[in-house]
Image 1: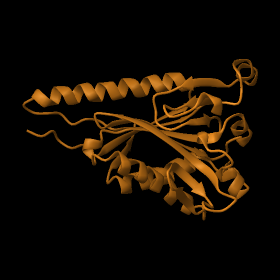
Image 2 (image 1 turned 30 degrees about the horizontal axis):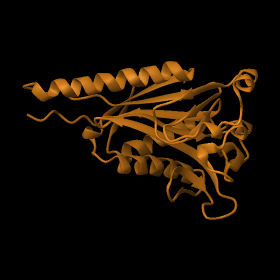
Image 3 (image 1 turned 90 degrees about the vertical axis):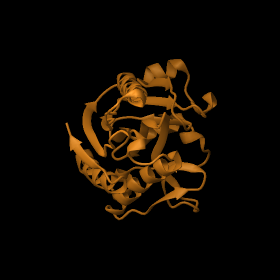
Image 4 (image 1 turned 180 degrees about the vertical axis):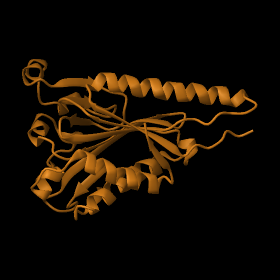
Amino acid sequence: MNKQVNKTIEVIDLGIQAYKPVWDIQEEQLNAIVAQKRENRSAIEPSPTPNYLYWVEHPPVITLGKSGLPKHLLLDENQLREKGIEFFTTNRGGDITFHGPGQLVGYPILDLENFFTDIHKYLRLLEEMIILTLKEYDLEGTRSPGETGVWLDVGTPFARKICAMGVKASRWVTMHGFALNVNTDLTYFDYIVPCGIQGKAVTSLERELKRAVPLDEVKAKIQVHLASLFKATLRTT
């Protein structure tokens, strides 16, 4: 018997949390879901697997993905300590990025077998979710060929990245996710080669709109588009 498909996503807002404890939460949830999927194989009545979306705002931290190069970090250990920035090498895809106050980070932990089994489609839908959200602020977000994430003014000398993405999947269960610069202090990006891409700028909603934007407002807009694109029901817990 096939397991029951679960298209409900539990939304959990962690507020401001350090990077490592949230990474641990993601690992625990992913491992629990993978273990449940293993048990379902031999179960007479397989149980539905859960899906989660964690919202968080991190204190300053730089993370390096599996395809990243250490040289893209432009500070040494002492400089990181002086500036109060943590650093982690992670198991997500992508290169190097910064997380910090004013940035909206979303970590979807989804069993893609509840939705579709296509990592490429998953990334494209995450991008579309951000593009549709930016459109509500009269900003035209676009994709840059070969570069996961969402950009403004691609193909011009003014191309700038507003949302970074990097994910990991195990047995179709996802972790890590996306980071949208809302009211982020962009000077932190001077300490890295953002996403390993030379010569391209980063931006934020605040910079583009010339005003601060409430993070809860942006979360609500993203959740509407997430539910629509994934044909899911979101439930706040």
